[in-house]
Length: 305
Image (cartoon, rainbow, N blue to C red; front, side):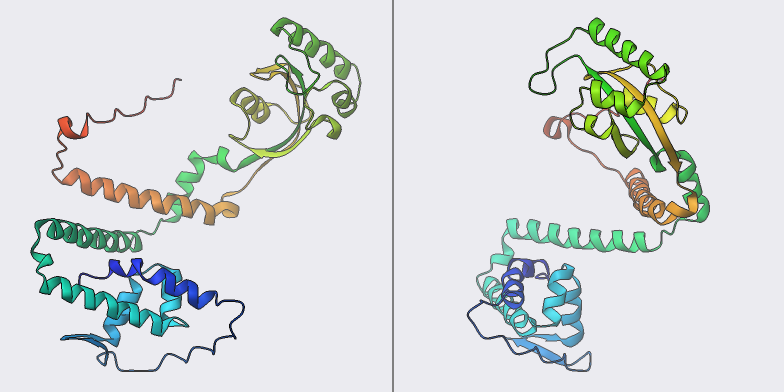
């Protein structure tokens, strides 16, 4: 049967009608329970073509989940009517010999290949189960992804960040940051100084409190300082594109392997599937005409050490 994917063009409207009846209309009667029938029972006939209950289930299985639910529930009859319409049109297309057109054959073959590729991917994925050793290896290499810090900061800006702020030179901002740092080292309360001196209007009223954040949520120089600074210590001025920051880490937390194991598995499983596909591609002879598709994309440069 070559019409599986065509159902997607007709089913959405049926599902919307089934799930969202017009407000003014009376509530529809509940859909009758799906009858228990033998798998080989013919449930739909269009011309000489017959669809059994088992075949209908396979057709529905090929649809996205939201359509499957409707096709087996409240939208069952509407789904059957749409399927019949597709078969009527397909049979008329054959009568007109549209299936002999080379363009049709190419497009139909692609649809079949695409459908088979999806089934193959599902089959490969179902047999790939990461072991605890696989998960532990990934965790050990990405521990930073599961680390977070709670920090405060004081920003002395170089470029204005809010109305009324004036641009300062790099030297002026650094000198001001060093002056503010001396106050805190001399015993002044960090939160009180932040409320008075910080140019970050979003955090100064909270004593410079940034809350908890993970790697990659801050600009790189700030990120590096926050995740290496000992807890409770005050940083030297840290320069970013916003100006100079004084950072104080309140706490740092690294989750254990057992705590993040389900999340790690969600990352590793797709990665294993992609590696399996890449291995299949390497085993096959694939040639893309460079004049038509352009030259191969160069691999990304290795990060500088």
